[in-house]
Image 1 (tube, rainbow, N blue to C red):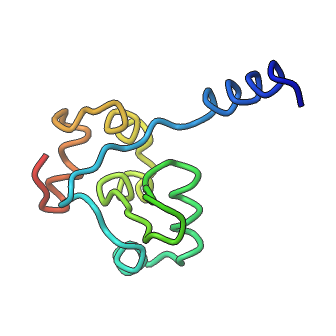
Image 2 (tube, rainbow, N blue to C red; image 1 turned 90 degrees about the vertical axis):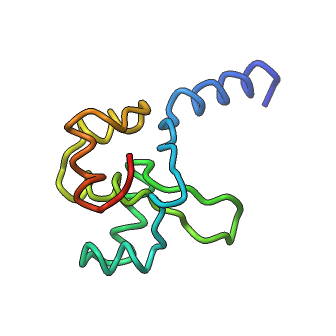
Length: 106
């Protein structure tokens, strides 16, 4: 693969990435907690994290850190609120209700 092909491939990968959900420490739950809260399987939660970009893993083998508010939004199918959260909006009523529901500060 030549330099130009590699650069084009990297540009396609960059444009297809989902912007991360910025998380504060109180927002984060572990995979087991996410499974317990939602009643969904570990596989489903992992798939949601990958599909919707609602988690981070700081290094290979590191634990998955999941955004609890984002997980609730996916669970309820509220993708509009999820995109608002992804854009950094933690205070609009559509987003705030999830933080309130979970007892988290926004």
